[in-house]
Image (tube, rainbow, N blue to C red):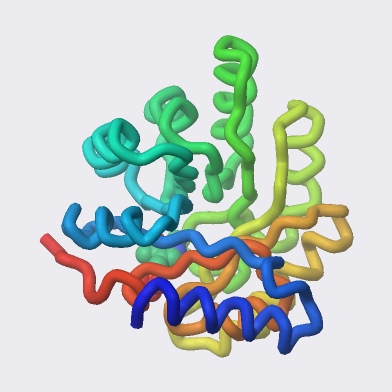
Length: 217
Ligand SMILES: *Cc1c(COP(=O)(O)O)cnc(C)c1O
């Protein structure tokens, strides 16, 4: 699959759902991909990328930014408290806000630096032990807490359990967002982005379908 194919499928899925063709932002997930593949997608004109590790992004993206203008970088993986300042300098959006301590650290640094990335709260819709995110039952309170901190909250993010129908999780995330007046929905990956768009995704995070298999280890 190429970037063009995925973009076409995203537009078609949006239209199928009765939404504008450009309603969905494609975040090309470039984690663990060779630089040549990332450069090829940049050369094709795409500018919105996702990384799941701060360290890896810090190695990779300052170089690309010297060559390509307008890069929009999204952190989609867990954020440790000691990397918040670095992440806020590097990323335009953070999709993994998942605990009060992290929200407070972001708020404090936003005050100091005078700027803050767009934020998404990660919700552990499957209530999986090993997965990050606030539990669905705690989401409303945490959203309110982030608003009290004046954080620029754009929406919610989820990663459904691998072995369940993702649509149910996407619908749950959409419901929590709607009742809290949040517009952004970061959901859908290579295997399920069309189903996510049917449930209202505004941001899909697609890696291997664009770049091919990741290099591990
Ligand atoms: C890796 C990753 C993706 C992309 O996964 P693909 O299956 O390669 O599309 C999306 N979201 C998160 C949080 C990821 O870590």
